[in-house]
Length: 229
Image (tube, rainbow, N blue to C red):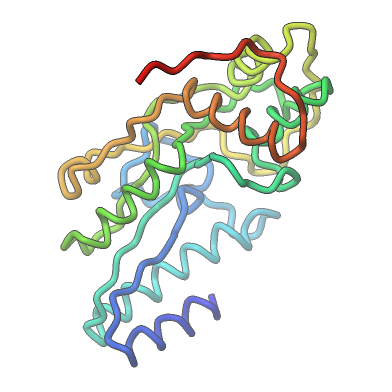
């Protein structure tokens, strides 16, 4: 909250256009799917995840107050699950964790029964969306994410099948207030920005596997692919 407030003040003084990297977490544990920007959310404001959820919600409130009161040009992106190379291995994000564990022949950690869903957007697509948003005249929040929904359990099985079919899954208790569904309605992004993601999950995972092999110096066990130009 304080960081957003400070940056809004700086943007006002400099006459800059302000981009807020908000999050799908503003929708909390949603009761509707897919989630559109008009959905007001289902957030537990006293739960263990509240510091993040409510922090982003108040950041959005401050951003639009600066627009209304001071005429500041603002853009707000509600970013859904994003993945790609150079992510921190230990940050707890599911795609990174699964690939890291699979490359090390460890059981893949799944919380709950894995029926919770996520929608994974490759980083290149997200960056293209952010640039399109900044170049647009859209003053409303915009969902940026991949509308293709997949369960965590299915994601685990896809990575196991790709990297090591002998791996197992280790189930752990589901964290409190962990969202059961994540699927963006990107109609506004398509209409206002002319944007939609292009990189399918299989391709994005392949790129990330290659990057993590280099990062951790793990040799590839997959056949080399010839590229004809």
